[in-house]
Image (spheres, one colour):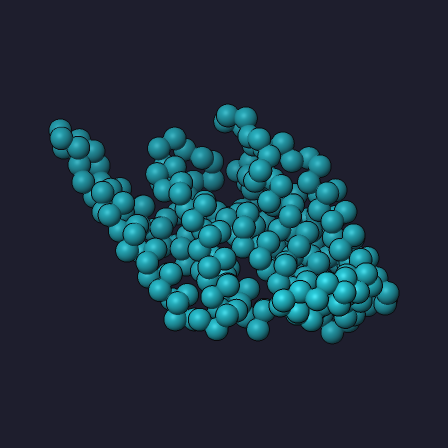
Length: 254
């Protein structure tokens, strides 16, 4: 799965750069150069890890470039309010192609493997596993948030276009808590502390409960309409998808 690892790294970095880009009010972020940057990152990682040394590696890398470019373009269209389901399908398809063809992927060699052997890190992973873990960690950040939002919009839990006062604005802290939560789950799972990872999941529900409950109240005049159903649906769907992203990473890392 070495080419898959390179693809995850490129996707994670490209989405992270997009999330850090300045966003003018009421307009999408300017991300025209992201596909080119993502492709460059993918090719550099593949070359430095020796993934272009075999015909199988070259073929999988070419397919990864196509999948990466398609994901970034479709996700940008989704940011503008269209094609959310298509973006999800492209993301899943790009990863599935790499999984199905993983037998053709060569092992990590080149200067990346040489550096890992030379560095003598306290935790010395195999080069293939090290590359995979880097990709999985990066995907837990901005890419995880992007996947969660795509699922929320596709299922109708969120509108396609941001709305002032909508539930995603009410529970905006999830954009930061989500990556932290996924990293905690992934880290604890890799350390074999699955019980502790479960406690993190349970704690999120307890901490968020007062905020969710507040949406069932009306104001002093009794005019405010309860929106607890919408907020709860948003919270539950978003949380389960976020946990699924982290647990899928755990399965791949295993």
